[in-house]
Structures are given as structure tokens and as C-alpha cells.
Image (cartoon, rainbow, N blue to C red; front, side, top):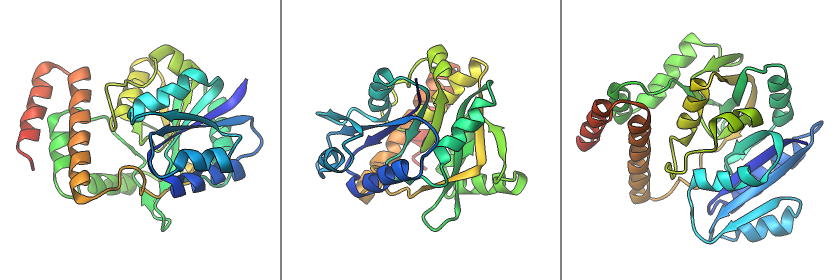
Length: 270
């Protein structure tokens, strides 16, 4: 069986996708792996580029943008591997990161999910993990300026992010999950079109007894300039999508009065 199936969902990020694929093939050795690209009806020639320049890649072309979770599930259903790596198209691997993650998981049978340290293009640290949202106050803090960055900076003050440790959930840009974990908890929830599907997956894994681990010993560049970087109006639409996805998470996993409070906070339009 293949060690790792690398799964990349793409929507109009041809140049970034080219860099991502090149890094996956050039920076991975010592393991058996395959790469899947699911193209969500891109109009920039992404699918044609993959077919021409990376013919060894398994390419799925969708006639429409089916969303992040559903697109990943298309490959998850078809691929057969010990581990599955969900990789954003705006990432660049280095230092044989995939093989390093496999080596870690092979020695930690209770860890179902792992992710690496994420770096901005300039080499600075980027938010890579967080705690599960538990109360409406978490969203209220999210709605305040720079709250996410402040919370991440607070994490840096109390954790050595160059080490490995257990976390609640990992940011889905670089997200490796064990085959047995998927068999127990199921695929990504396709009611999350985009955003919060990584939180939901980690939450379900934790409920089933699996640990999620942040691997600070390894780093991957996340340029954060991919499918979700658009015009100001599109940015506002994406923020609404984030809010709706987080509200869906609360509605799925918390009592009615909690997500009712969440709706009230969203109505404030902070």
C-alpha cells in the first residue's frame, strides 16, 4: 500500500499550484507516495498545466466549484494509502517534510492527525494550530481586530513552537490524517463548503480518542495567497463564509442556545 496520498484542491491558483507540485516531487524521498489534484473548474489553465507538466499526478477535473471539503473527499474515496495529506495549493514543501511526518506518525499510534509549523513567505511564523471554539466569546474575539493574531502571539509566549506537542486542532493547510482515523470518524463533512471543516474533523477525531499533534520540528511555507485571496468585496464574502461555517460547527456540536448566541453575535456585524 502507498505510504501517503497527497491531496491538493485547486481553484484558479495555477502558478502557486505549479510551485506546490514541484516542491512535493522534489522535496519528498524515502516513502511511496502519490499526488492527487482536484481542480474545481478553474478558468486559468490550472488543470491543463498539471496534465502537461506533471503527468504522474492523478487529476480530477470538476465541472463546477464543489467546495473544499467535497473536493478533498473525491480523492479520499479513490486513493488508498496509510496516510492522507491534505495540502493547500499555496504551500511549498521543504526538508522532506512528508516523510518526516510519516516517520513521526509511525511511532505514535494514538496520534490520528498531524500538521507542521507554517511559515509566511518571509520565513516568519504563521498560525498553525488553535483551541477548539467552545463559547460564543471565542467568535466575539474573532470579530475584533487582530484577535486571531493576538491569540497566536499569546501561544508563542507560552509554547516552544519549534517542538512537537498535542493540540486541539490544526490549520488545514498541511494536514496529515491516518487511514484508521478516517475509517472510524468518516470523511470531511461536506456541509462545510469552505472553512471550519478542519476544526470539525479534528473535533470528531478527538471525540473518538485520537490525538492531533503539531510538529514544530518541521516547517512548510504557506504563502496564504491562494484561492481565497481576492478583491475587497470577495474578501467580505469569504468572511461571511467563515462566520457561517463556524456557526455550522457550533450548531453541530453545541446546544441550541449556544449557536443562538452565535447568531446574535454575527448579527452585530462587528
